[in-house]
Amino acid sequence: MAVRPILRFPNPALRLPAARVDIFDKDLQELATDLLETMQAAKGIGITAPHIGILKQVAVIQLSETDPVQTYVNPQVVWASTEMQSYKEGSVSMQDVVDDIERPARVRVSYQDLSGAEHVEEADALLSVCLQHEIDQLDGIFWLDKLSRLRRDRVIKRYEKVRRLTQAAG
Image 1: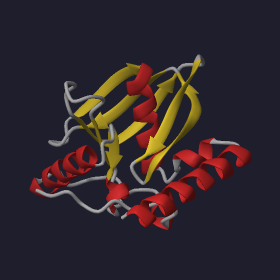
Image 2: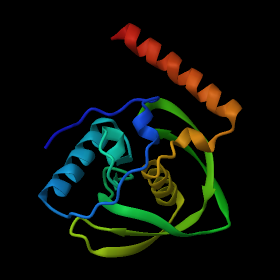
Image 3: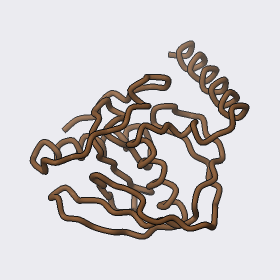
Image 4: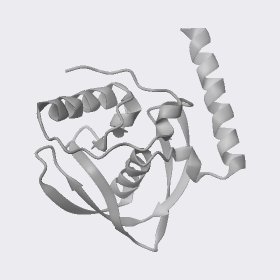
């Protein structure tokens, strides 16, 4: 398997909705493995197929090195609490910048695994945030879209500065 190149903000493909997966085969398993390796190389905790330019509804999440890896195929939020929480979020497509995003504190998500079996999972805390973040990405909603225009502009300016410094150093 392989670490794949990650699309960088502001690539327009990051705002396209991903297609449902209908074929659960070896290619899907290889995609999930590549997503995991790419996410780990980027030091992320979640990644979707659109992050590597593949418009399929596949997300991989691993909150820490000691947590199990979970692959979500065709995930969707089927219930969200009215209670809200705020977490610092970022993206593997926009490294080294984060900002606070407010989301429902708990969610129930339906999804399929790599064999096509259907599951429902409830999540809170960081897993809830990560699931909502990655499902948004699969729907073509980039995390910046959750910010006010002022905060979004500030994050983009910070990101551009980080990119310039990184390019100058590299």
